[in-house]
Amino acid sequence: MLTKPRDELYCNIDKSHLDLHPEFIPERLELLHKYITGRYDIHIKKDVLKFDPPYTTDEVLKTYKFTNIRREHDRTTKWLIENISTNSEISYKDKVYKSIIFRLYNRIETADSILHLDDNDFFTSLYFSDHTETWIDKCRSQFNKIRKNYRVTTNAYKVGGTTRGLEISYPQEKCKPVRVLLLVDDLIRDNFAEKLTECHNQLEAFELIRSIKGIGNFIAYQIYVDLTYIEEFPFSENEFIVSGPGCHYGLQMLLKENSDVNAVMSDEEIIFWMRDNLGDEFNSLGLYWNPEKIFIDLEYHDRCFNVMSLENIMCEFQKYVRANDPNKSKPRNRWKGFEYENPFEN
Image 1 (spheres, rainbow, N blue to C red):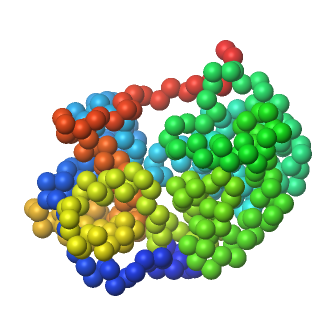
Image 2 (spheres, rainbow, N blue to C red):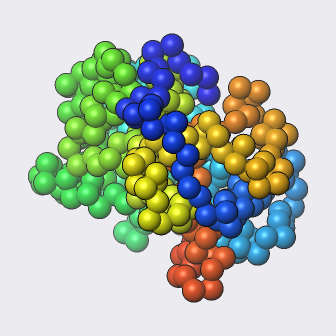
């Protein structure tokens, strides 16, 4: 992704702190290099070259499930980009609202279940936001047909706070998935998409998203990143970062304890520092690092770290550390091929 003209560079960090040098644990830095190169190699073999498994000899990567190094390569985000973010049949404001709806469900099967309602369906109608009662009623009818043991959302994000917030805000709606639609209906009436466009920088846009009922920091940042895939959205993912709980834990595993320098820098500042300097750190340890050849399938301007990918990497890195350490608890999710789950009775 190219940096957009309205991006504020190094948004919301103290740039003077980037003159400092975080203190890393060398063995963990080597493990980070192994994780990044190994996981990206799996992506190349699996998604680009279409090889058959196994894709790696790394027993941890072979056994446990890790997201892609680049978020846009993950199956759910690819669906969002292809069906909403870059869909020329959808207006800009509808892309904003539909992106929010999709991420709050965070499941392709759920989106598919309300996709093909009629010629004016949920995701591809040109101005669904001008016909709110119609599309909400149709989606409610569709949700009521879904089998009882089907999970409308995934476990990928901790959405408990969002679920509780929606319950408090829309107690009259007994069909729980429809509460997401009622929330977006309120955003439409409040001209939320227009307000986003008027934000002066990335932080202001993020804070506007975070102000939505029941939306905490982590989900707000995920929605912000989703919106950056829309060409008309004024900001990119390149110059703004909000460290989630997993990223924070990953950084703790990478950095030396009781370091005065590390204590001064925020998670976000360390991520920006890593974006600008991590390759040199790898090279100083004798670890091969040539992003032009490692990220070979990306556009030339994307063959580098950006802060969003590093936030994602550090979240997964803490799982990789635990899986490699016999004294730590192991990740829960094991790798398996994707199987589409039909939301309706067979």
